[in-house]
Image (cartoon, rainbow, N blue to C red; front, side):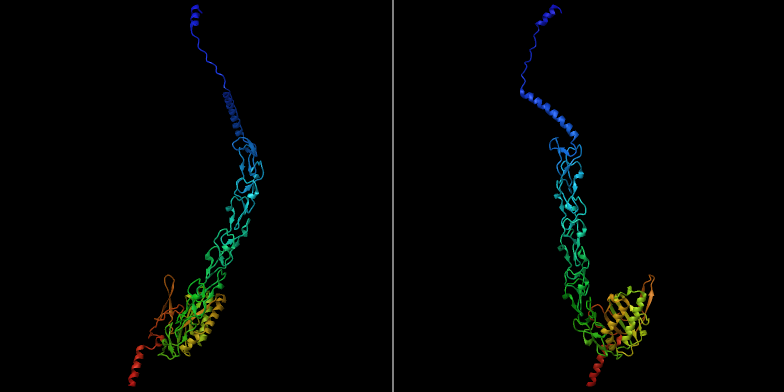
Length: 489
């Protein structure tokens, strides 16, 4: 360089050097800590990514692998120990698979997560049972069905659930005692074991009652006494049996209604089992007569059988004629016609059904049987009533019926009614719908209904039938009385 350049450079001021500060000891430690933390974090990240060996897991808030405790397990590379699920347990430490978690045995359950001992498995309560192992809650124990109960704990089968006895019922699921079975109330019964609803308790039928609680058969339903009736179901004591009213009677126990006193009889008392016959030569045309004064003299015929024929109506209980076969119907019709003929001292051919067929009867609905008896020349209406209204005649009809339908049917005769009248055959006609109807060939009085209790009504005589001649017209009686008074003067 030129001498002038070197000289100028020397004349330039030099930059002032920075003072070197001394190293503080705390700063040095901080740097070391930072370097350690970075190295530790990197090491933890590497350890977390690698996980722990099987049977081990990280301790809480660390990446240190520790042995899994009882009730837990882990696979290879897991970072934590998994707890055994409810319904299982394990006492092994360092378990390497879920297979070490043993299931609670049948009849037991456990809701504990990670249970270390079998003692956590509790028995299913009474009224329940466990049919499989490893149940995780008490609800998983199956409840005994309604109508059953069990006092056994830890049961493994539904066979321990015992049914409520007949005469009782229960709607409770999982019942643990027989006290949950409720007895059928008085007036009802049940022969069903293990019933689950009150509807299983059957009501005693009409005409009966039962005071027993928890009754197990219909035999506990007692029949109301003869001379009384009971129209309701499920009654609980004898006080519900109602006395037959005057003009009515009952010959059978356990009836739902009383029969009205038939024509030719009367009754003014309560709870009678037979109605009084009108005196010979008199007749009460109306059913349900209350006084003997309603028996009127027979003016056209001394025996009150001007036409020498009468319609006989029998009311049976428990007889379903529609259920009989054709052969049974023919056999029973002939048998009943024979009984009527024997009681009236006539040949079987003198008994005809409503269409005029000989030696048989007409079967109607509700156990009603009707027929006409003709050729009654040797008997008066009084004699006929005495025979047909007797207990022996009712027994003969019941026996003949039992011979055909069997005694198990329990068929009985509730009432017999006769009406002196001329026979008038009915004719049958078929409509386009194939429904058979019956129309009388001549006008006749309505069929007498003698099974339902009715209020008595006086019926005026009909001048166009034999029955109409039985009661004297009031105007004629007045004329006779006036003539007698005039003669006395």
